[in-house]
Amino acid sequence: QSVLTQPPSVSGAPGQRVTISCTGSSSNIGAGYDVHWYQQLPGTAPKLLIYGNNNRPSGVPNRFSGSKSGTSASLAITGLQAEDEADYYCQSYDSSLRLFGGGTKLTVL
Amino acid sequence: QVQLQESGPGLVKPSQTLSLTCTVSGGSISSGSYYWSWIRQPAGKGLEWIGRIYTSGSTNYNPSLMSRVTILADPSKNQFSLELNSVTAADTAVYYCARDTWELLLAFDIWGQGTMVTVSS
Image 1 (cartoon, rainbow over the protein chains, first blue to last red):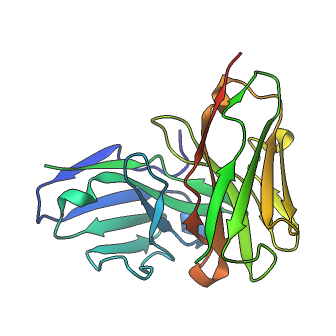
Image 2: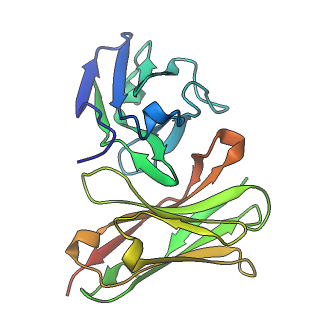
């Protein structure tokens, strides 16, 4: 059971918008720690998608965006594409401990 | 472009020590404000942070594994390593090495491809 809670799965049709939530507590996200998001395609290593709650690394399309409020954070994907089908993980901190969410499988219908 | 590559035995017997090495290329392990971490992922499951070492040599470990883990750096070889002792089947996973940096607010920006380690007799 992960300290950061994500829905096990979400789905959407091509072109639609989906959101993935990440719920923590007052000792991690709610304490002001940043939230990062990773995309993991099947059989590959995770890739950084969003850092510092709402920043995109170079090369990540602006279809991906992040937000944070209180003890939760969200990843939004607009204009859903087939290649977005992957597992998505949030990550935050509890002091020096790095925490990951349990992951959310995105299915593009 | 910095790249990370894990290496080590793919099979470890129960109660023995799992030893992995991460080789860093395209940059020095000793320069910059970087942390070098180990992260693992059991098949079909989520990610678990194991621990990290800073360029200064200081370390932090996941409390759930702290009693069994050692992470060391070898700047002369531009490598850092993971030792996990007294392994059981529950330690079977893909093990990744990764870098995080203050430049990206301590997000893991570079990952190795991962190496599968099976604990079995």
